[in-house]
Length: 328
Image (cartoon, rainbow, N blue to C red):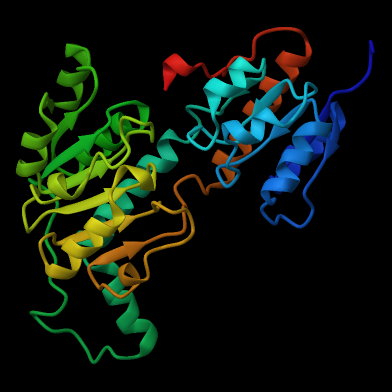
C-alpha cells in the first residue's frame, strides 16, 4: 500500500546508530539477543520480511530460498562478501542482493600487515611470555624473527584490498608481486612497483610471504590446496584476511606441524568459528576471530551502505551496490 513502510528483519545486532536510523526509516525487527539464527528461524524471517539484512554468519542457500514465498524482495547483506548467499537462485526468484563494498578496504589491509608482522616478528610468543610471567629478561638470541624489508610478498587477489595491502607493504620495503584473474593497468603496476605472475604456482614457489586477498567463489575454493601449499618455501609464511575456504585448512595444519611452512596468520577459517584445534597448539600460527573489519568507523560505514541500498530500493530504483552473478 502507498505510504506503508518496508518490513526489514536484521539478523544480528548492528552498531546502535545504524539500528536507530533503520528504525526511523522502516518497520524493523531486530535480533536483540545477537544469537545467530537457526536455519528455520532465518527462513521464517524471510517469509515475513520485505527486506532481510543478514551477515556472514547467515548461510542462505538455494533450498532455503525455495521456501520463502513471494514477499522477500531484497537481501541487503551487511558485509562485502556474499559467498554465504546463493545469489543466482535469489535472482531467479526475483530477489535482489546488495552488499557493502569498499568501506573495509583500509581496515582489512591494516589487519593483513598486522598479521604479517605478528607472524614474522613472533609477537604472540613474546606476549605469552609477558602474560604468564615467564620472561626472565632480555637475551641476544631470544625470540628472533626476521625483518620484512626486502622480502617478496605475493598477493593473491589484487582488487581494492590487495592494492591497499601492496601500498602498505611497499612502505615497509617489501617487494610486491601478485596473481590476479586479470593483469592490472600498467599505471597501477608502476605505482605499486608490482610484478604480475600469470602462473600462481610459479609465484607461490618464489615468495617469502603469501597474502590471500581474493573472494571465495567456486573457482577459488581451496585455491591454496595441498599441492600448491607444498610449493611454498619452508621459510615462507601465509596470511589470510579474506575467506577461510580459499585455503585447505587441514593441509595447511599438517604442513605447519611438520615445519614445511614457517608460519601462518589467519583471521578467517574454512569452517567459520569452528577452528581446527591443532592450529591452536602451534606457536608459529597467529589466530584472530575475524577482526579484519572490526573498527567502529568501518562497521558504521557498512551500516550506512545497507541503509542506502534499502532506501534506494524502496524508492523504486536499483540499489547502488546490487550484486549480480557475473560479478562473482
